[in-house]
Amino acid sequence: MNLYTLLGQRASEGRPIRAGLIGAGKFGSMILSQARFIDGLHIVGVADLNVSRAKESLARVGWDAAAYAAPSFGEAMDTGATFVTEDAMALTQHEGIEIVIDATGHPLAGVRHALSAIENGKHMVMVNVEADVLCGPWLAAKAKANGVLYSMAYGDQPALICELVDWVRSCGFELVAAGKGMKYVPDYRYSTPDTVWDHFGWSKEEVAAGDFNPKMYNSFVDGTKSAIEMAAVANATGLSCPEDGLGFYPCGTHDLARVFRPASDGGRLPKGGVAEVAASEELDGRQVHNDIRWGVWATFRAPCEYTRDCFRQYGLKIDDSGWYGSSWRPFHIIGLEAAISVLSVCLRGEPTGCSKEYRGDAVAIAKADLQAGSMLDGEGGYAVVADALPASTSAKINALPIGLAHHVKLKNHVGKDQIVTFDDVEVTDDLDIVKIRKEMQSMVAD
Image 1 (cartoon, rainbow, N blue to C red):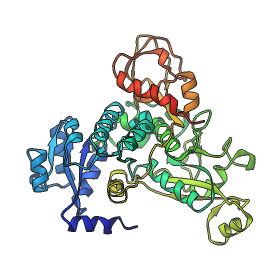
Image 2 (cartoon, helix red, strand yellow; image 1 turned 120 degrees about the horizontal axis):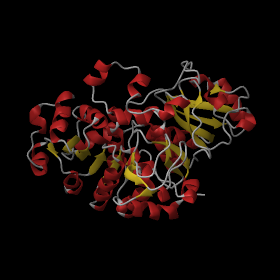
Image 3 (spheres, helix red, strand yellow; image 1 turned 30 degrees about the horizontal axis):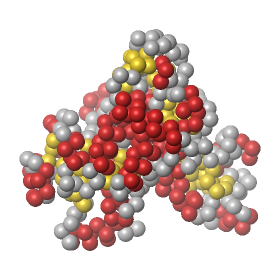
Image 4 (cartoon, rainbow, N blue to C red; image 1 turned 135 degrees about the horizontal axis):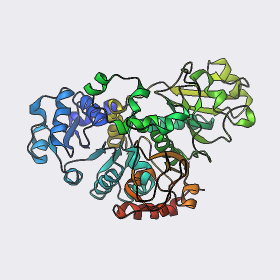
């Protein structure tokens, strides 16, 4: 609880934290919105394939044009302004930048940006959970070997879940499950970019006025983003992914301790120790009472009778037995909070969540019958959805990760609801990422 004090000390010494941001979409815009209000944090560079869009984002969130008019990284360093460029790799290599934030949402690009940053001695904050679940354990090991830190992004749900998990364990409670809330019913699994806005209930005018990507938002609806995030949580916390994929059990905050306990004790979980999702809609579409759609949660068990009695005496939300309790945070505001990761890494030397081992994977599953010769269109698209499975299962069946299910051709017919495997596709590009994935096989946790 002293990040602000530590940052003030560095700022008073004329040593601001100098960061580079890759990706000026929704998450990146939210980071930029807050960065101008944080004394001691200098965004030296913003890299985006569309420089005009990046500058439009800066203007939209309130930056003065002069603040992002630096013509080079060097000029930005000297003046305190920001250089906007399309060259992300140059940003990861510039000697004056201390920490790089990837907010592209593109899994392959994110892995490459992280690797370049790490090899050039930069700390890495990976907003890009798609990249993290694809190669995060490998990147974290690479960062450690290079004497820098690799971190999840605070404000996004995986990092906030890691914080709750750390609290549970540090208090000596037995962690049972942890996860996030999500608007979901099983039929959403087959949603496409054409139907996504119907599920959000937004008007065409609202969508047109915002910076919303239909494929990205469809990945929220169809469960892909949840699969990616829960696999990342498993890799960071030591929790498991469910053997048969995510359950998406409808549940409100008042019932977390009852629903997310093992079935042997009256709950919905086949076993404890898993990452899961609390759906905010009942199967018939009704809103769950006290839903936690935007938040994160953890359930835990008292280790002894005395602790169980204290749970009840001090107002903790507990199940009917009193043994199980729950804690939650009802919101996450993504990029508005991401500076916490930058400050924690640079001032404390501590990541806000980090993929330590390869325990979970987000695998591609056919949304419809897919014919040989057709192309997969990746996360949030028309062809595939992701589910979270144990990494040991994914490795055994040679499952194709959702992060590699972009712009690849099918060699075989894959039936609806079947897992796509590496044997089913022609991988001709992205062989560098495939090589990393093969090296990760040695990191599969039991």
